[in-house]
Each structure stands twice: as structure tokens, then as C-alpha cells.
Amino acid sequence: MTETTHAPASASDMVREFHTTFQVPTAPGTKPVARFERVELRYSLVAEEFAELTEAVYGA
Image (cartoon, rainbow, N blue to C red; front, top):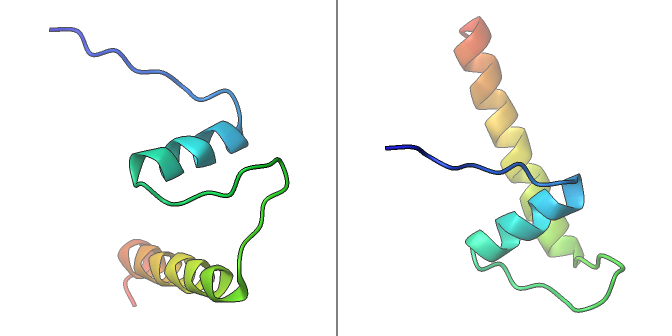
């Protein structure tokens, strides 16, 4: 069995694909808009993932 994969053409395509896959609501238009609460949540999630990666790589 052959698995077919594709690479999104750009970072914005990857973000769009992520939002579609995980059913994240998006606003129509070309300019990205995010409330402070959502930005704060995303930042904390990225920080948590980075801390886990650092621990896995360096053992803290």
C-alpha cells in the first residue's frame, strides 16, 4: 500500500490546513485577527511544548 502525502505550499497554507483539520474558527478576510486571550493561550501552549522538548533533549 502506498501512502500519498502532500506538502503545503506556504506557512499560511499550513496554518489554514491546521485550522481546517482541528475545526478552529476563522474570520473571513486576508488580515489575521486574534483576541488577546487567544494569543495568550497560544503563547502558553508553545512555551509548554518548548519546555517539554527541552526536558526531553537535555533532561532537566
